[in-house]
Length: 575
Image (tube, rainbow, N blue to C red; front, side, top):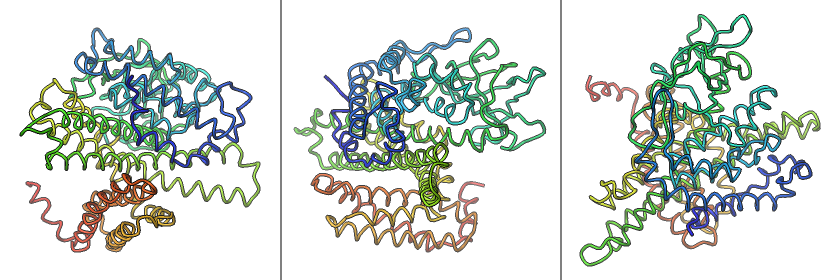
């Protein structure tokens, strides 16, 4: 039998090695629900056992049921007729199997029928599912919709909708983008008007909406007449009825099983989520941060599938009398793919823990803050502020890193396959098509750079580096010294950009600073994981030896450039 969790030692080991004690303590509020729900854990060991057993179930469903249907789902795609969308049969069957396993409310509270799992475990589940079929994740992984409702909606709305999400009765969509508002969401034009009956009604068009055919949508709309910026936007919950028409579904390069819809709202009744005017600035930003972590996990699953496809093909394909894996050129590609895969996974689950700590501390302060003494409250607030800064940096950082890595790994996997990989006979061409969207939707890599640069220039990454260096890395003294040297050069480059305080110069080098910062973060994480493991030490050595010189060279490039050198950019760009 094929189990996509158990056959991945790096993932099973990650679950064992992650420091989840604090995460679980916060998530479970001291295991207060142990007597109220039969599926609530009694203690840390019980919670960790729940996570592992669930991942094993997901792994079996992914390996035995989803993966064998993925190729047919890709070929069939979703279909559209007379305003209705139908999933490919294999995708519908996979969703039903996940519903039967009670996996549609992974992070929702138990009082709504959810599992109350941490974000980190949800990301692992998404990785496993995405390795089997990335398009399935686009529907299954939209559980962020329910999380946003849980976090910001009224109790009445929660009671009405969250049990339906947890049971799998409904699926959702994020109805954000429009024909003239893609990345620039503050330019949203879809109108929300409040009628004489005090109910809200939506009018306008949404475009490029993943699973827009779902039963429940969170819709970003302009609720304030006369506004043209983010302060005029509110968030609404809409349940499908005759007032919204699916005008078409898109013909796409990849993720064919996931329908991407154009939606026309005509006086569609909706419910306000939270407060007016906070739709984009608070609620959608929270929603998108959760989605970005989910897309990073999706990209990780695609990377795993593409690497395994290349490795298998290289074992079986014989040229010049030997399997091509024995050719140095191919061995080099495979080694670099695997090292990149390990680095991105380390960054993904470090980010998951950071987000879990931030969310857990925030919930604890909100629900139990009044019960704590002044000193304890002060300490908790300081801890929450720290992890909020880290989450604000690492969420866009990991989205950029994992998705760009997925594209590189899928590209190299096809290269290992040669001409065969270009044909539809092999799954690798699907992996390459599926990977391509990951560094575009939920914010392009360029937007992730904009989101991450503040944490880099503001010192959050430097603070995290300091914490990383406090770990015992004595098992790799030479590599540790190499990383510290590269970090020092990098910090000089960051300080130089800060000192010049030139917006154009900052924007020009932002991508370079973010990429180098991500490489250094991965280097620290790989060193930390290398203790008492010869293979991991080899991975860390390869990564550091190849990335440290690139960080230093990139830093030198920044330090040796000047703002006036950017004057030639317009000419070089062809203007």
